[in-house]
Amino acid sequence: MKFLIKIEEAVDNTIISLIEKMKHVTPHSVFAAIDWVKHTPQLAKKKYKVIQPKVRILFLKTIGYSQHYLTIVRGYLIAVNIYFKSEEFKKANKVDLALAPIKKFKTDPVKAFSVLLAVMFFGSASFLIFKNTEKIIVGTKALRAPASVEVVEEPIIVFKKIKYDVLEKEIFLDITVKAKSLEERNKLTSVEKEIEELLSGMKIHATQLPLSHEDTDAIEKEMKALITGAKITDVEVKQVLEARPKYFMQLEKLYSMKDLNLQLFLEDTKRNRQVYVDFTCLTSNRNIILFLTDHAVEMRDYLNMHVEPVIPQLPIEEEGRQIIKEKIKLELNQFLKENEIEGKVLDIYVDYLMVS
Picture 1 (cartoon, one colour):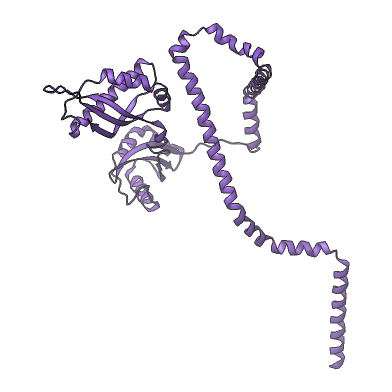
Picture 2 (cartoon, one colour; picture 1 turned 180 degrees about the vertical axis):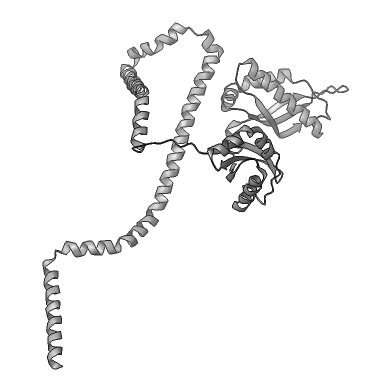
């Protein structure tokens, strides 16, 4: 037994000495790499927590600056459009306007030459891109497409944006009916209008909006049981959500005017009484806002000339205030029409009303 124990100790010592020699021979960079791999997940997690807010801020800045500069460019384009429609442009000498850039070469040649080079560069780049668009599209599709593409016709019929009343609100559903085969699909196609009328007349019950998975599954089962005349494997329902709410960018379509003077109609008095109105108008586009801002004096004069005196009881009553709002809206739209401005005033909100 002692002999076997001595042999075992000798083998262990030999193995330990071999491991020590291998450690001495192995470069230090190998052990450093092993430590780095071991601690990489933890380091990456720490760095992610540090970088995440910065990435989010960079993302928000990218969106904000893009929208800001797009708004500026759109503002310039709208201003140019307004200028082309203005009386100033109609009365201006078109030859002088055309020669104005050429005259810039004499007054400021460096700036004019720089603008000319920029226009030539972007113009030639746009022309080359437009000319090779078809080749780029074909090449991109060829790269993305698999080696052999086989178009398989699916046995489905799709009904787009069918309207339903659910929870006192209107919703729209895209309904996809999957048939067992193309022959069964053809049977459904022959009565497609009847199926659409059948589906649109169906009453839908839901517990919440947007539709939950449970409500969607229940609706799909009801529709599948409702359609007869062909073998159907499945019915898929997808709610079509509005991309933007009605109030999206509405603040940029509001224009406020203060101290609009309306005359009061008084028979038995020698004093002149007035009603001062502060109002805000909601327009259909931002082009109108730019125009009204640049022509505020003309607009005020137009309203004073065209809005008739009102009786004293009119601003006090709710119905009377509504009449005043409709009159201001009517005259503002007429003012825009006479100046050939596209769009209209949609609504008038009275902010302040005072009688003196």
